[in-house]
Length: 204
Image (cartoon, rainbow, N blue to C red; front, top):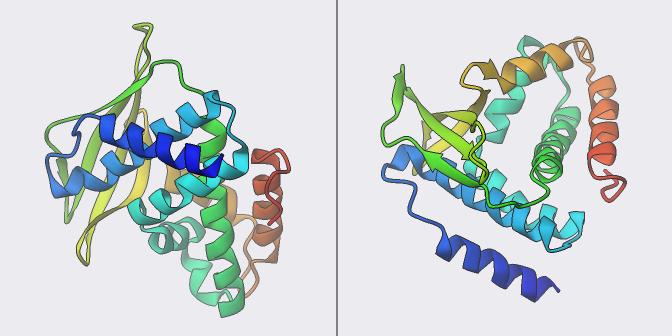
């Protein structure tokens, strides 16, 4: 089964159109291809664990997870003990990947499009994308803030409908769960979210 899923994912990537014409759009195109593979694997009956395992390295490469986590926790991040920071880093990645696997669980002919040019946001860029349904209904706009890193670009925020910052939403949720010097409530909450998103398939 693992070999079949790996081959299916590879064929999906090879069959996908070239969506990244610029270095800035490259991490977004990689994520889009990974999500399409996840959706198709879900429709083929692949387990949550196998879809998670396939998507995890794509998310890790496409996103600047440490920056997103720190921005999501906010100014109290520097007060969190190193051992809790390490635990949060692991759980936040699991939470992010599990969220995508849960949301992109089936394929019905959808496709992603990426705008040919990026918007400038200081030293960052905004890569505009759409998830286009096959039935001609209204596409979902998913825009990505990307920032330069050593060797390329990585995603630092997602803008749902072009305006709703995922980091801001996380910050609103997380801020009430972190006290100066203690993030144990957030750790517990993230573990619960991962378990719920995966239907118990993941046990952080």
